[in-house]
Amino acid sequence: MTTHAENPIAPASQPPYYAGRPIAFSGYVDNFESPITAMEFSLDGGASWTPYPTAAVDKRRGVNWSFVYTPPQPGRYLLQARPVTAAGPSCLVAGFPFEALPLGSSFGSARIRGVGATYADARVFRSRELAGLTPEEAAFMAQSLGIRTIYDLRTAAEVAARPEPFLLGTKTVALTPSAEGRQKDAEKRLVAGVIEKYGQPEERMRANYRKYVAEYPLVGQALRSMAAERRPALVHCVNGKDRTGVLCATLLRVAGATEAEVMEDYLRVNNDHADLIAAEAQRLGAGMTAHERDCLMSFLEARPSYLQAYFDEVDRRYGSFDAYVREGLHLTPEAIEQLRALVG
Image (tube, rainbow, N blue to C red):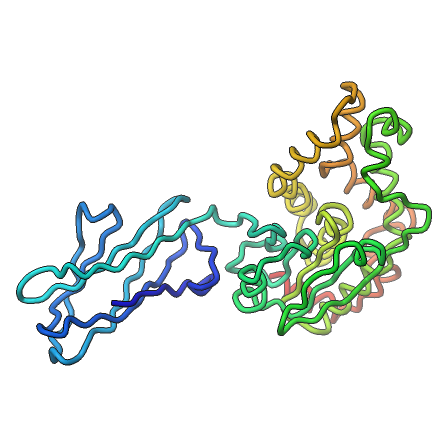
């Protein structure tokens, strides 16, 4: 007996599956000797079975069966299926183990997630850099999510240090930001005895976000490209927090999201990357004073004051966000409508 699952969110060979979302299992079975009269399914290790009658078939033929199950909560599950004949249940049992994730959680080593939406609805995604992408994750991106364009916001040095795999069926657009005068080496600047030179906690990061308005005209280039292509896309930088956060926040606001919704989506990176942030804090924080550690965490986390500093600088330079959209990003009304449709 063979079995597989087809998920409305992701095909069986490319999870994830999500709690509260139906998964359609299907398979084929034949018993060789007796016609199959029913299929039975168990989700409790065989303690109980739920029968589903099938039309009697010629004993020389098998049965193509299907079964839809919606996991009620996150966790690991095992679906077991077995055929039933006139003589009773068969000893032939197929098992399908699967894990249901919380709806809307990020996926894989790159922490891929939808921008302002869950996987079921999103057409724009965000992540960390893709250098450590596994073949399964690459297939999930290209096949399940349908991503066709990747916008890489890393500097040329960052790209050279961590080249990414080529994903069949996708193209990568390198939108290299201005890195002049910017020190990106955490091993040298985020260490005890040095980190305090960058000011009080949050001070340096707010300054960086204000610079993004002038340093990253590529935000408009990326948004105009998305609007023109109208295809699923992914945005990333190195950590998927600051440059990616600014671009995605701008996209959401252009698409009509409220400021509260934009901030909520931006801050989700702290939860998505919580284990990575903790590991980096432990690695870099050796020997730091309490104040230095506060400074360190202000570099590693997304903070509301950072994104607010970016939008405040937009208002200072352009007078309003709408003026920034027109004069800074050069988005036409048609492009704005296309982005709204893309984000949904």
